[in-house]
Length: 118
Image (cartoon, rainbow, N blue to C red; front, side, top):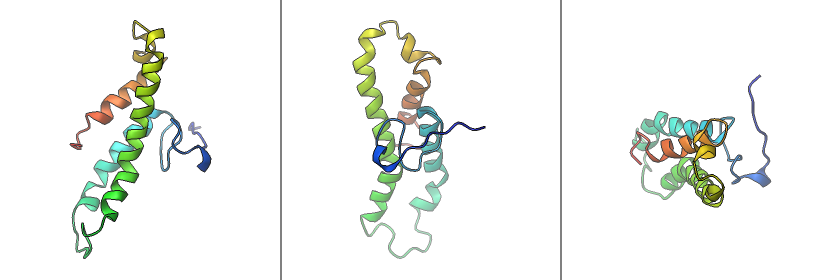
């Protein structure tokens, strides 16, 4: 059985609830966003006989809403919670271990250093 988390529209924007996310934890959600951006790069960023390509703000707002805003929200939650909880974890055991938020820290690091060049 695959673990999943249901979240309604009233919880969107929370740490564990984003629109169109796929993954059981923040690491998998961020990895899925980076993977989808990389996989759809050719179809999103080249004209392909589309007459209105880059002539309206719809393109940039669509890319921002589908990928960048969600990653930004995850990074914002990570920075906020880490700064609030850092004083209770001086040895970085909670944020660096697999039992704690190690995967979330890895997701934040991988999202900010993605091969997509953003």
